[in-house]
Amino acid sequence: MSNSCSDGLVPPGADPLTCCVPLSREPITVDQAATVVPMLKAIADPARLRLLSLVLSHEGGEACVCDLLPHFDLSQPTISHHLKVLHEAGLVDREKRGTWVYYIARPEAMAALAGLFAADARTTVDA
Amino acid sequence: MSNSCSDGLVPPGADPLTCCVPLSREPITVDQAATVVPMLKAIADPARLRLLSLVLSHEGGEACVCDLLPHFDLSQPTISHHLKVLHEAGLVDREKRGTWVYYIARPEAMAALAGLFAADARTTVDA
DNA sequence: CGTCAATGTTGACACACATCGATATGCGGC
DNA sequence: GCCGCATATCGATGTGTGTCAACATTGACG
Image (cartoon, rainbow over all chains, first blue to last red; front, side, top):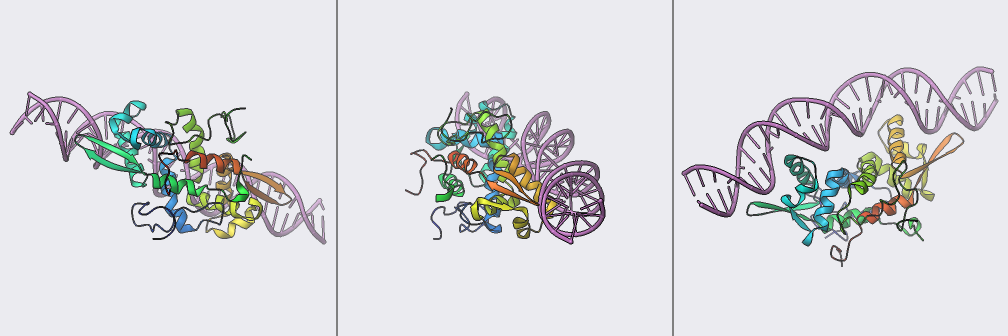
């Protein structure tokens, strides 16, 4: 397949090769950066970071919009927009069940991000 | 003192308490998000992510601007700007040695980010 | 002390983005 | 078939941000 983790992690037209890059091991390439940055951009927003955390920590790693809305002072379209961004970044999946739409966290995405900051021996902290 | 990692991680007026939040364990609070988001914003840019990776992977985890410039098609002021953003986010330290300025990666920051994506038992991937 | 090289600061500009209100779509119940 | 609810899309708007050219600052070296 390719690397170690992630198959079909990043959504549109990006090779799965460029993932799980240990950021401190060697300089990340331009292509790798281009692949990872959209994911980082997606969570580099208070509302979206909280949304992702809410979905992740929710029962079964999934939550419907109606579960999420009450946690915010934002309008429903805004939440919907943020969820779309998270989805397009490959961080959450969408699943429609009747009237409700459930968003499901993608563990591979979290693993990919965690892998980014995986420390080499030299960079380990907190002895 | 407080948590487990990080003392003086985030730079200006933010309690070190709000750090190392396992994103998938429980919903991140608004305050915690506000603390972490600036770091994520800082690396949610191709140039800055590459800069951080270059510094991190450079010998000794540090590099001067003159080492970094040749890797980019961007102007020197732009690189300087990006480095400032990384510095203000608490991801790199500045150290002036003669004419040159060295930027040093902060392992605590990387650990904090890694901690964000640390998976609970339930969300663990890749066996 | 004057000049040069390395880096940072400022102001300006174009573009992206977060947010909202209004509206559309799609499903369930009557 | 119609109405109501849950969610998405659209258009508009204000704010943020990446980038540069021009200038300022600081240290090295004659």
